[in-house]
Image 1: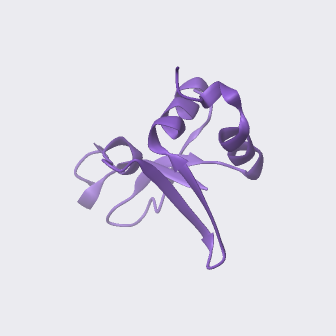
Image 2: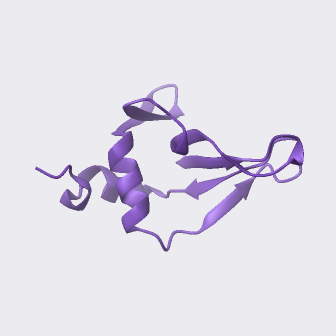
Image 3: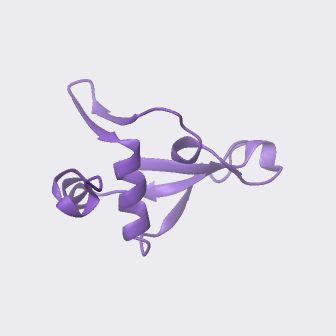
Length: 90
């Protein structure tokens, strides 16, 4: 699962995008026509804050609009969706 957080349109400088600017409550990632994951945006942000050692990657580096973000592997997605560490404060 890729989570975009920045983009560099026309290579004029990095700007917040994706997760950092969304006003949505839910982050939906489509794995295929038959499989997706839905996570609350606040939970995903909390996951990335707690797991601050995740490597930020650049995607489409040679395009007119490269992006940066995180590549979450199945074990990351499993942790994100099941661990109480990322639950809302009560």
